[in-house]
Image (cartoon, rainbow, N blue to C red; front, side, top):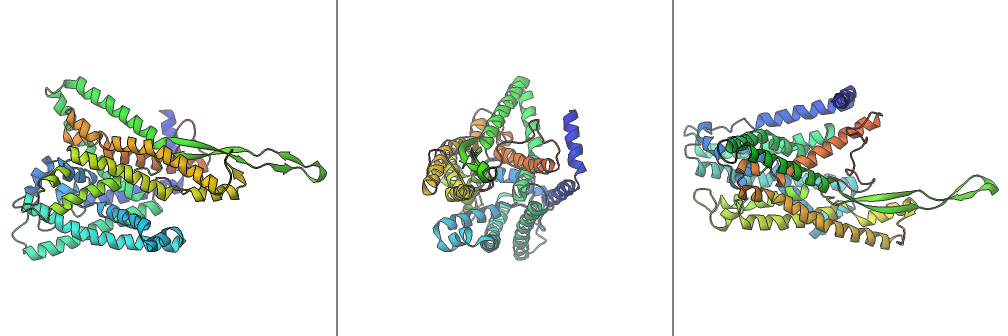
Length: 453
């Protein structure tokens, strides 16, 4: 405990880090405030039944937005339209030469252009989803729309407000990333998840105590939950170390020069190099059927096969979701881990992988190793993603089952570790102890090339 308070004191004593944390908390508070500001023309009392309907993707989306979805708030759509736009742009980078040039060859100017395209696409997606959301509210909750407001003005104004809310949330995330601590977009999703976690936990406790297994069953669930968190930590932190050898160098002067063996190091290739992004991307795509159903059903509720894709406990949903996670793990790993860059970096550093020729052979070797470790990593990631369905099948209430695994757990673990790593970097740069006894959170960074989520 003394070590904990000493670490907090060290964090607070660094002015830059303290300012970044306060700035981040302030923007997160603004985001949470917007989750309770109801859209104009909405009758809040008519939406009370929504808080009790946590089944399906609507319940999961409500968890991601911290209750804003069921509140019909200005942030009801959250940051998910931006995630959907990012998916589309990144997929275009594989198929369209123009986007390939922007991503790979045009440097900072290309990244700025991609950011601009993503923002414009976010606006377009949000306009469509805003119309679908209002259709859902109108069809599912009679009396939710006040009769005092002309229906045309209600629709036009609220579509604009919902779109502005998503764009403002996107701006908050970018500000946090630039001037705060941690990844802003991921933090906005995480804060929404945390906001609904206590309520779900107390609901599960009350459910078990009132004759559904008792205290023992609740403690057993918590123990299993801790084991799942530990397994998720192993997935996030796991690395495959590829040994590298630096070439010999000459030491001394003149005739006294003697060869000195080069030092040894390693390249830490992460088992899950893509972090939480495959889960977020797959989840965003799973929201699309529910959005499409808004326009093809009279009451705004999906039917038939679309209804199964709207239920996170259904078999079709989990099969599709599982394979989407695997696919996006490979896609995002291919974007982050570039074997050619590793090979060029090793060549510039006058180093090599023992037993492997420099250049193309090194790039092929790294690519092969990455492919091999990504396969089990992607399957385990997919398994964790569909754990909520298994939890619900064993009697865990729906609200808590969402946190028992899947997207919520992976986002919480990944974002917390990433934020802790950034805080630790500030501490170590100023010669303070890290957040753990070893002085360093392992497995979060890979050399100086390649990105890490």
